[in-house]
Length: 217
Image (cartoon, rainbow, N blue to C red; front, side):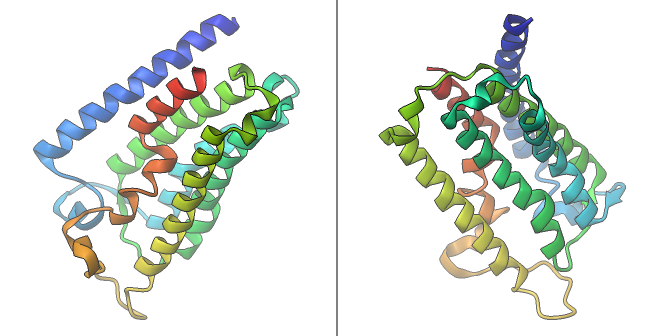
């Protein structure tokens, strides 16, 4: 049974990589349905706050579920607990904190919301199950330079992400609802600016694939 699930997790990693490629090609052909370009798309929409909460929820719920399961064999090891805690902290912030702080957010296309929900469900299962059931590390892995470098990148990425969210929220004056972007450093030429580095350090499928192969050795 465990071997079958491990094969399933491997398959899901490759699926994420394939879907990332499909998304990249699709965005080149039809454009983005998120951010500044969302108004160009028609279709049913979900209010911003519940959309963010619900779409991110699976990636918070999966690790919490694994933490309370008595059968989570690998969570007795410190490296596994730390890695899963890093993943959980990120999604607690994105699920419970970020939606509350949204100021004048535009509704999200239902199609975009569903895709985000499916990704968070897949990614939450993948990361949580592997770290709680299969990943094997030496107890001193948390002092290894590779781990410390990765932890530093995670921490810096999260701090920048939260700070960038704060900047973007405060671009609007009270009562404004229009789309606002910062003009410094040619940031206006990008879409989803604060995702470019910081969010990718946490959950982009391409980096999940690399991370998966790295931690499997």
